[in-house]
Length: 505
Image (tube, rainbow, N blue to C red; front, side):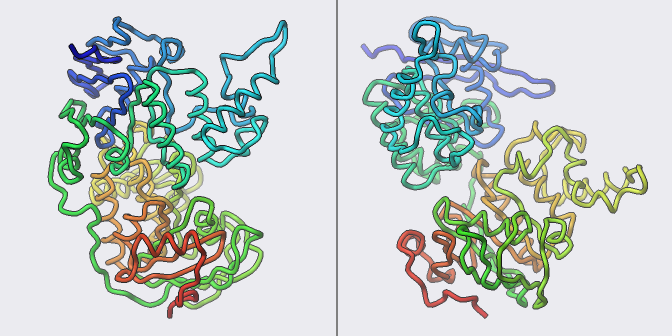
């Protein structure tokens, strides 16, 4: 007889005001299994996991964990029962040390004092299992995002969880860190730990999971062994329709040179970078995490100062010392962290959309609400922004819809150069295709696009030309027809200079 699953959720229903988030959902996980939970943004994945981990309370249904019915009122209760969640948006205290974050709430005492020697030693052992060579006394704020993510994994290992929920665990990890994480997942699985794996990187689900469950519109669609699916079938199950292409690149006429960057240097982060960009062109910027891609676009946008070099717009040298200068010269930047740097989450769709042009809508202390509303509605209609109305708070929207609001905010400035930094991070496959189609439309309108991405298929699928950066230097340019993953990885890791190492006229 087959043993009962470690976790069984049945008939789970959850309502929010005006929204049926989950309807009669079933989900189960066995010990020693990696179970991928997939679906578009808004499908109900996060709601289901928050019910399991005690963040939300279900309206109907039952949760059976380790053979008994449970009802967790708080995340702490779920953790004590053996369920640990590693969130995409890390739940850490940045100015506490690595050790303090790992042991928070479960400190080791020695008499009336904390046993720091033992905690530091155990933290170091946990970090070593993850191949992290960092001092456990280091403040979390001093670590990169990828290292912070791995500290969360170390925390889960410390709590000896029976079930670990991983929500987009690789979104900020390098290739090496992803390999290390997968090795840890396989070891945990061999030790009998169950893992729920949530990711928009579908290739990862095929690589690491034993079963896949798909949710769509708050309903259970299918649960099947991973090896019975292929990518095309999985995408169809997730979006409920056929997507003819994951990367629907359309050719756009190449116009005049719009941007030229010459010998841009910034301390040790950017070293003598030169390139150019034409109207209607999508220039993909590839490289490993830490290569300097985000630093480059922030420097161009005036968010960070440069030491030397110059920027030319339409052939004319310009001085950009601030984002305001960049906006005046027709440059817009969609940052990689849309929630902290691209949106004001407590404001509504209308307020976020018109934020970048508010000066033109304001007279004295009054805002032309009618004009503001008309501009916002134009973007909602033309970009198919899924929102009940303009007054919807953006924190309540899905990741893909939030990204469209950020894009609308910048399109309101009528930019000639649009920079996307990780444009599809944390959004589902259907929303990705919509973003790509918007990029096609913009390119056809003559907007010049720089696209920074850690996803090589995205770089290859949507770029007209690829620039590869390694350790703050440009190591190669590849035309669309010549670009391959192997060539990009070679330039990103070996630092070989291509014949196109200077701006292409």
